[in-house]
Image 1: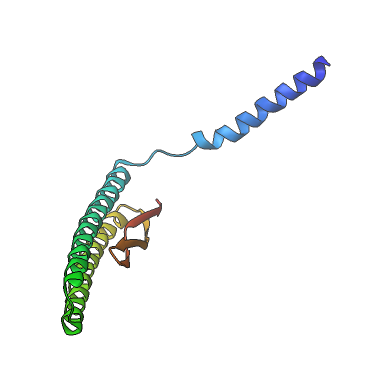
Image 2: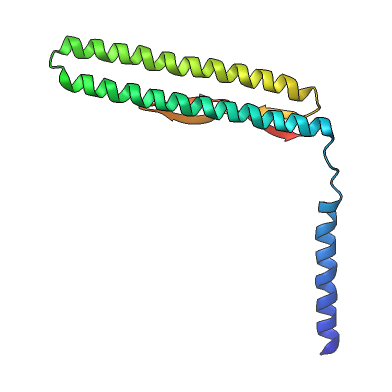
Length: 142
């Protein structure tokens, strides 16, 4: 009986040691890599802030459009309001897309110099009655 419990305890300890040694073998990141990782986080935070700001603007624009649409009876005027809304919302999303692509491009250029491998990760966001793909940076490795 004692031999079985001793063998089980010994086996458990061996498994624990084997599983944990690889975690301690990882090299710490260099200061240059750490700075680059912080830069990626800052860039992504800027992108998320721009997305949130645009989502609020898009929702306000959509609510105003719906209000104005309810007030109008004439089909021509409704079509005009719809066309105006379409132009405005598309311009808003296009402006956001341009800003975020520029932020992403600049961020990728800076961090690849530090030896970090990154990808552009397209994320689908909701803007009032639309959806758009926006591109934050995702770290793959260094």
